[in-house]
Length: 534
Image (tube, rainbow, N blue to C red; front, side, top):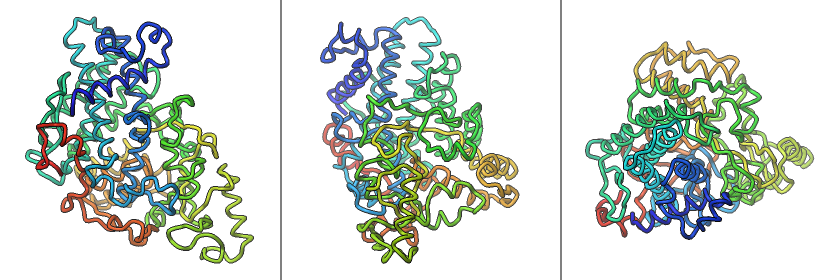
């Protein structure tokens, strides 16, 4: 990393924040925004934090041309892990990720953006934290909120980095495995070497504990874009789960979901498109004027978004997984196994008409089935349909390219973390009780006593995570934690399209799961060389 990149990113953060503030533009044009002004008082520092909230989902790292926020990375991680499956060409978005051609390439924009987006957050939060430490600000709830969020963002950023650019904590040797650079100073001019995985986790845990301490005495967050105390507990639960600190994972997951009741059936099927939904703990409210449109989350994952990628490439669930969903589980309505295959370019070779679709015997029923789906879900007549297509993610204004909110953390995830952690501690009754919170809310016939061993519990928890959190970006890290490979046989994926990614060995024996360090980092950081490449 270089000072030049840091200053560019910091300036962009400030421009994002201040460009909507007429008073500030009257006194400080965007080409002269300085660190001094940005960190001169808590009000300005809060604006810097607001810039980070915006960049959680925005597409600004490369001047707006390349997707690089969570809007992109959440679906990308599910494509890499094979949880979300492509069915047609569309505009070929995310094909490189699905075929394992992006994260395995040091020159790809995917690795570059993931690395520099996170180090942007780290550089900005370093500046905030170090600036407060060097000055004599009065301690107030506002200042605690700023510091709490800064430490939480830094913990989250390092965690996202070390769990993608390093070997998984549970499947490697954390004390010796190379992690990522730890850069806590204001200046990044000289770069930093790779710390070990253990050292990076130590920094992460120090930061998230500090965040919780500050947020305990902070002002109430005005909206869910802010990292609240609940969200900080949730981040800590994720960190603990990834390293096998089961007790901390269970405790913090329970704290995180407190006050955020699970969706009922109607809420679950409302579309996962609003921060106002009951179990949403952390999310970004997307304002129309700040949308990234064709780099938005729903462009990659929703059926009815009006873009070429959506119209020509329905995203489907793994067929074998779908067939495990009980008839009594209302989530089976989130995918349409009998949708007609209307895309003549469908990868399975069965698209275009009733003549090639084995589920239909005549044109009238084939066309009527598509028309019914279009009418029910509000897509356009140009949208294709496909068996097992997803309708989990619904636009609030379907058939448009208007923005919808992006959800980062739900209480359902926290319930599943608690259940997994207790199962791994062999607390059978505790894991059953936690699992029942979710299972009984989704499946009218759910019986927690059917899972009476650690193995049975873990099998059910894995199933629940794959169904409940489908498309929300958890597949990649789940497979690393569970040390599971990919086998798309009978999934509905096309071997011709997926190539080498169709079958991948488990992460413990396959280092291709680890993202390549961006070549730009190796070229610009004197403390990282080609020998450090994954």
